[in-house]
Structure formats: C-alpha cells, structure tokens
Image (tube, rainbow, N blue to C red):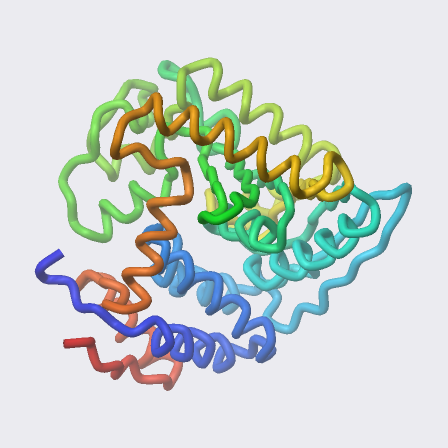
Length: 349
C-alpha cells in the first residue's frame, strides 16, 4: 500500500455526506450512509466502502434509488415489516436494525422483513450494530442472479450474502459476513478498477460457462458458489427468507435498470435475538467465552475469531487513516467535480 494515500475517517465521512446531500438526499440519510460506508473502510472491507459512492450517485440520478425516501414500518402478526421507500440501503438498514433491536428488548425474538431498499453493501456492518447493543443477529439479502455452477449458460441465482454477529464479553463482537459465491462480485469490479489483467482461478465462469481468470469475461458470466452445490443451497435458503417471504421485486427491478449485485431495490431478512431473555446475560457470556477459548486454543497461538481482525483494523485506521488507492482517488475527484463538492482533503502525513 505504498502508493496509497491515507485520509482521516472523519474527513471522508463529512465529504461523503456532503456529496449525498448535494444529490438531494435528506441530511439524516446522507449522514447515516456516510457513517456506514466509512466504517466499512475502517474495518478493512474496502471493496464495499467509499468506492461505492459513484455507483450509488448514479442510481440516485437514474431514479433507481429514491433520494427523498421516507421509510415506514408496521408490525403485523408479530413481524416488523420495513419499507425503505427505495432509499439508500445503508440508511434504510440502520433504521430497520434500530427498530428490530428495540423490539427484541421486549419480545426476546424480533423478525424484520425489509423491502424496497437500496443496496446494503457489506451487511456485516448491520449485524455488528446489533451485537454492539448486546444482541445476536442474522441478516441475509437477496441479490439479482449473478452466480451459477460451472457449465451453466447464464447466472442462475444471486450470491445472496449472509451475516451474523453476537457480543463477546470483554472482546470485539464476533462478526461473520459472507457472500455465497467464492468471493463477492465487488472483488471483480475492484480488479477492473485497478486495471488488473487477471483474477484468481475459481472465482468465476465466463459467458461460455467455463472457468475464467479474465475479470472482463467474469462480468459477462457468473460468480462461482462456495463449495459447489452447498453454496447454491445456502443461496436458495436466502432466496426464500429474503425473497419469497417478502414478495421481493429485486429481480424485476434489476432487469429494468440493468443492475447486477448492487441493485437499487433489494429485500432482506433480519433476525435479532436477545440473550437476556433466553438464558440470561451471565450464562450466555460464560458459554460464549468457554467455546471460544476452546476454539482459539485448538487453533494456535495466532488464532482469531471472525471480527477480531476487522476490529483491530478499525482501531488502527482510526489513528493512521484509511488507505485509498490512486484509482479510487481519481474517481472521488470526478465525483467532487460533478457534485460541486471538491475532493480536496489533505492526506495524513
């Protein structure tokens, strides 16, 4: 990362919020979106952070995302039904999490169906929010078809991501976030942005259904699932929870706008559980500590559980800054010129 420039997270957050406000996004949603995107970078998930701003602005301009969205919610048959009104996914999901966590404080288990939301990007950010408030949370999101088994003639199903998180007493929350493809499609997009000539074997197939290491061909084909048919099975589970149970229009909306993984109209399924009302906080914390100790002891001196690396990265980047590559900086400069919000932030020394 020697050629990367590092910027203070506060500066980046303020700039991103200003850019979204300039596009007509209401201030609260602009700030929430900026906070989620920049925290994504802080935690080292650079494919889903500030690099997504350009794509979201394009969706706002095309009308695929509603800049002036007014999300609404209702509880029916014990289920929180959250309508994002087409708004930016980060703002929509954060509010959905807030309401779902509040319900779990009183009801032990809270289920939320999210519809009409913009792309959520790294969904682990939202279950992390719940875990930091003491909850166990599971979130899965439907995407348009962009994944298929080798030999397929086209993308067959979304790489429907799944994330879960829970608190760890005295430590960082455990956060696990995965696409059901070998890697998220954002890695291919990043490879193209970085002008890479190849991607690793096993990431994708081309339009001919055969494996490819050409990122341009991968975009014409489909991402490969983790563990073959097992990854497809997990994607089908998400398709039912986040798609069929919500009456999703994700695929239709994506087709209308020519969108792929970052479609502007997605559906998601959120489950939040309150340990206090299951076994009590003390027993829950003790049990988690016990099995994590067994796991780490067996895994070696340098072992970490999911979420520890990201937490360490966040702590470091809050001090040293977020590294941004030249290609992304060039994009941010163009965004600033178009929005009238110059990207003139000073890198950290």
